[in-house]
Length: 295
Length: 327
Image (cartoon, rainbow over all chains, first blue to last red; front, top):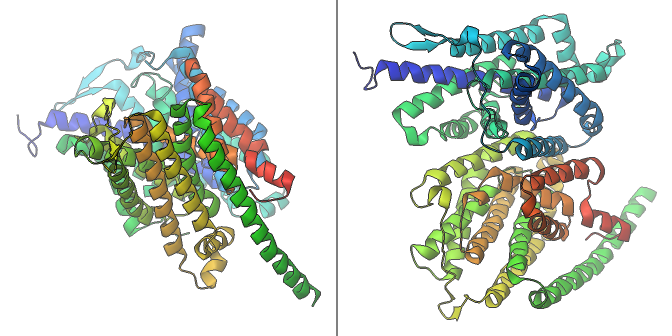
């Protein structure tokens, strides 16, 4: 077997696959954050908790209602998204006229509550959620073995990301969203219901996080802290990419997932900090982020 | 004309009011000192020392948020980082406690220089995210670095002898040292806030563009207040390491950064005494609810939500409005 830069190719490709998987989650979550931030001007600190909630709802559906993975993939984003809409109407909408930091603090509090409740109920150890039967197989690609489920996660995430990008950049609804972001008063004067659009956008962003959570459930164990650890990395991804651009969050998300695992292969000690090191470098060279516009 | 007159009168009032205010604050500081001297004979000294360390930490954080207008979500890095360095200095290098605390504080200041100079390149919520991300980096380093003891932390840190003379083994002796450090730190923060430097900070917080157009080097001021805040946070963390003879991952974890935000928020952002009250409330709550496990997290989350929605001025802020006097 040939060795690629001192690393057996199977190990290298296995790690690259893992990088793409992690990158899928970074991309989906930073995309949701970008959409919510774009229109609501709120950094949704609860995004990680809502991702975790997606995974938990999938587990609930299976355990209590016997509804399998595919139903969960469909229902969990709707349920968690609806929950997000309630939160937005009841709580977040009261903060729009205040300083940004209050939105951050409120959603931080919400994240603590959600995590605390689930930790009380299910502990920290994590619940198993198995891969759906249709995707349980493994393919031999010649140079590596590819589990079907992992391939599906990458394809699903890419599809969702690109569809979201298309909806926002190329469709009429997306044009309304972007216009409302620039000047809500003017867009409202054209007869578009901006508050409702804001609410639905929040619901959509939250649903996106929940969708990522369902995708993640069979890969990582379902536990109350799964979002808390992830969200900080996603924040770094957002700073690196610059939150202004939708495509930016997708590209940076996947790119950083890959860089992270490559570091794990070549210099394992640095793998958990490499993203933050990159963030430091980007801040020095291009403070607005790789794809961001200057403030 | 009348507007100019009005402004003149108002100015006169502010000058007089600020003298009265200084006397008023001095009275409260004196009362705090008196309470601090009596308290250990009534309450458990170790609990009080914990409150004091967190009060200093919250005051340091408030210096940055309340007066600089900068929301750092990564202050655990300086608090916990300093506590590791202090613990290591006291245990492995055998430094006396005051030198160990100074070493820890200096390390926090250096960390503040490094992170602050990068973080001030972004504003608002980006600033919060950058500080949080760097704090997480410090956390990962604390998990992996050879001297931090990983999950166990640095245990059995010697309290040592102050100046090599006074043994700090007794809780009561140590209590008075911690009281001196805490009150000294808080008074220094008070002086910073009420200095010309503090006035410029307020100007930047209120209207950054205007401060720039007045010719102030805004970034220099922001960096300076960031470093000061990190340094005092480090002083608090280092002192805590000596008190509890322990430096552990809890103090560098991001939940600690959230806790200090909560203390400041519940006490009253931008008030002098708010963070002290906030720290006392939160530490007391944690001590009483410790047996309820994750309920502490839920309670903290609820307090966050309630404070942000209904109670943005905090306990001391509300009191100050009621008394019509800044506290």
